[in-house]
Image 1: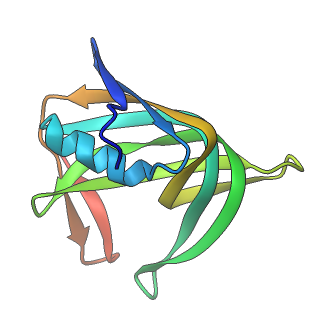
Image 2: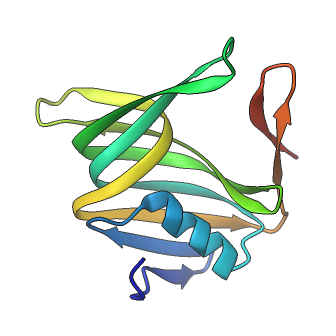
Length: 143
């Protein structure tokens, strides 16, 4: 990660602007730790070099990943919480290619492409945790 700051405070949380080559999840995790964010919701958009989507297989209790390149991220939404003392990001997105085909679903990884990715982080006062629900084998946000 570059030492150059990638976010500013806002009345409701933070505005983050990531640049080419930045790992979106690494920066969000760093923000959570550095600013002691108890939980938050996120929304964003921008240019993506690589996006790894995952479709959850409930029988195998794991994601089937698919990585795509050079996309416009038209929607990025999710929640920031904690799991076992570490940041836990749950994010979904929709992205389109140069043929205007769109792809969407759970996001496992995002690398910023040419341009930027802008993310609004709305901070919540309550620390929220994710716990694996044994009946489905997936992390569930606890309220």
